Amino acid sequence: MANRRVLVKRRKAARNIRKITRTMQLVATARFQAAFNRVVAARPYTEKLAQVVSDLSRALGSDTDAQHSLLKAQHDTGRVALVVITSNRGLCGAYNANVLRKASAFLEQQSAEGRSVDVHMMGKKGVSYFRFLKRPMVEENVDIGDIPRFESVEPVADALMAKFLAGQVSAVHLAFMKFLSAGQQRAEIVQLLPLAEPAESGATGGSNLDYELLPDAESLLSDLLPATVRARLFQAFQEAAVSEQVARMVAMKAATDAAEDMIRRLTQEYNRARQTAITMELLDIVGGANALA
Amino acid sequence: MANTFELSVITPEKGVLETVAVSVTIPAYDGELGVLAHRAPLLVKLGAGWMRIETAEGQKLRLLVSGGFAQMGDNKLAVLTEQAKAPEELDTARARAAMEAAEAMVVTDDASFEARARALRFAKEMAKAAGE
Image (cartoon, rainbow over all chains, first blue to last red; front, side):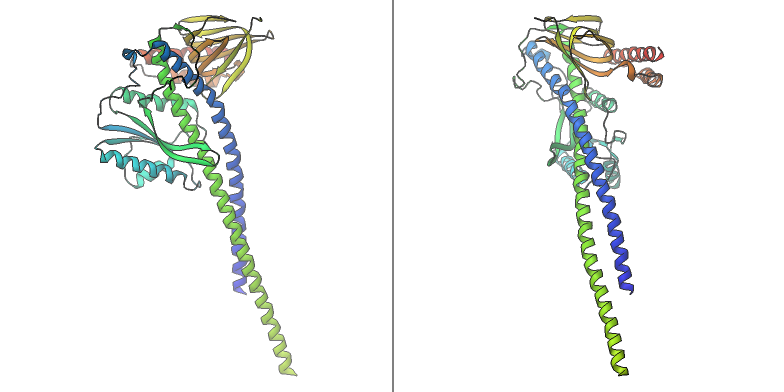
């Protein structure tokens, strides 16, 4: 019967899809592990850097003249920058949609306050979304990928800092998927520049040592702060990469489960169709025999 | 008290080295600087060049580093650097790529001049090490 053959075909298709999504789920799991390890490996640098900065700013004291221009809020130029971190690849559920929704809300909020926003878009998915909406972007970067390297993030950070210091923008914000835990990620807007107060009043428990400084404190600080900005941006990229893999893992798990449900339903339908056909045939035979008798 | 101290070399991507050392020579921004155990607290900016390490087991290690900071305190030396490469990791292709990237850097102010000089020196050392 034609109906049965169609059911067999559909079941086969569902099985193939299940095979593919299950493989993708496993790949995403492995990638997630690797990305997560990279985030953990990068943590000591960020922590040490924060400690050094807080030690140094304590050594400088609350000398207001020593306030570095990366810390100071520039006068409001009516223009801010927003770096949006999306993925290069799809099939990761609502990952990109969530980040982009957050970014769009930020854009609306800023324009309501009378500021214009320079959008720096990272990742193919965000670029194509904004192109589709015909929203302008000042930068489209699709080279960073799901294994962010410090060398490729560094120029992005440097360009942003140059823009900020030149007074073209009065603030730089990041929109990305923050990785809270393996079970929880959240799309967030985080301010990158001006840098938030680096010393959280001894929260790091930094040592009160009398450092010998080479060169002097101010020029050290003017090197440390850009390093902090770079490290923060790099960390955002890494967290986004981990979140992407988690999102893909969850999406592929859901797809595999849905395929399983469909296979079960199709199998049931197929069996019923087969049974109906057998019954019909039997009825035919019995009917024929009765007619002859 | 043993005349050793803890050393950790960290880059933004990972911790490169964690060891107990007897002496370390680091390439500071204005020349080399040797560190022994119980050195007074120090915070110094790094340039580009070879970091030489003698571990407690008498092993001699070398790392090519570029940029960043070294912090000594509590008999612990932490080296935060943007790049750290062991001699085995260096090859001519990479050295050439680094050299090209360094030469392409545009100088607009003191900081970028310094960065370019550092990148050039790093690339040169890479090429030398790879050529050996």
